[in-house]
Image 1 (cartoon, rainbow, N blue to C red):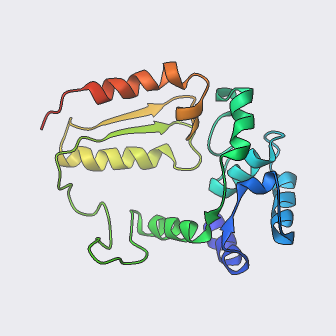
Image 2: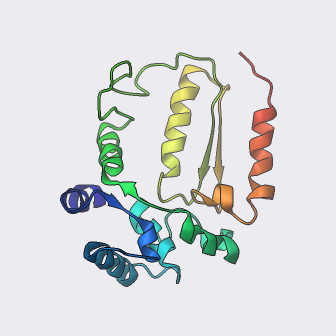
Length: 193
């Protein structure tokens, strides 16, 4: 719904969204968007966090579970998000419509579509998806894993991580014990090429 209704309007009004507007909104439009987000997102008192949710998906919050962040990290994110070009969202929308990654600019030497041909490498892929990811749904990682698995069964791996979202997989207060050992174990697996 955001892609279909809000994106065309936003694209005419501005070149980017900026979660950092939660710290400083420099224009009238930035101030209005920030006020809108404050009125509609009540997940916490961190306005940058709330703008991140508005910008990157549909969730309260979108990129993490607050239960997975300590206070210092939740405060730190105020300085970690900045301008996101509206063209980024336009490309994502084209990919959503196509059902797979597509080129928007049609650059020479790159395919027009990605993931429609069988893999052309023996690289092993391991997919990690937070069960509560509201930015890139875990179903997308599952579907991508299944695509790779059809071409080379029992070679790639998928881990759907309960109680995690998107970025808390990396910045969560327990990621070092819950997630990183799993990632290291996958990296340590011998190449089966």
